[in-house]
Length: 248
Image (cartoon, rainbow, N blue to C red):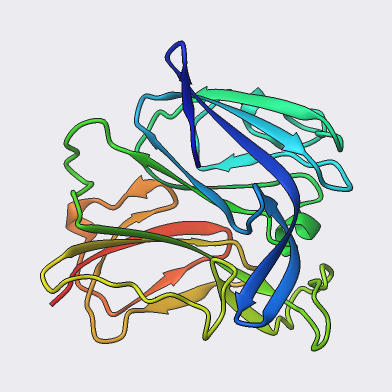
């Protein structure tokens, strides 16, 4: 997501709005998202940055944004009716806080969230360490993707927001086969893959032919003593994780 500096503060602007997402060639879904896309653009900052995020609501109902995993003032947490008043259609709310710890995070609504997340409202947040970190390696390739599940009937374009179990589309960054890009690396590259799961279910993730280490979960680096080579990891619904590997 583009940003500008304003007296030492990184300023971002997100617009919550209906979007059209081409999930696979020729298959377009009517979703909700941010800045014309679903998932929304990835926000990247550096540990210690003060950030100011202007959020404008162009949806047909109220919304908010919860900054999943961030340590921030209660009034900036984005839970409608609890930590802030709902953001009405046509209005703008400004979130401001310091990105206090490096890691892998997400953003999504906590306002009619069952509907709004089922419609594709989600995005990734990455806070990079300010200096060399004992638990966060420098990598050659750093990928991020969000898992989401939809129920879109044949011939329709809009997800059924009341579905709880019988989803027919499992998407990576709201894309499905054959519309998913490959993860291209060179032999010997150190690779980090950040995964966020905003579906209703847990999901095991397997990198076929590779061993990897789980280097962080839900915004927290995994201690070195707890890391070991794995072939599959389990990403819980509503949680985040990251894995690291060397392409051999």
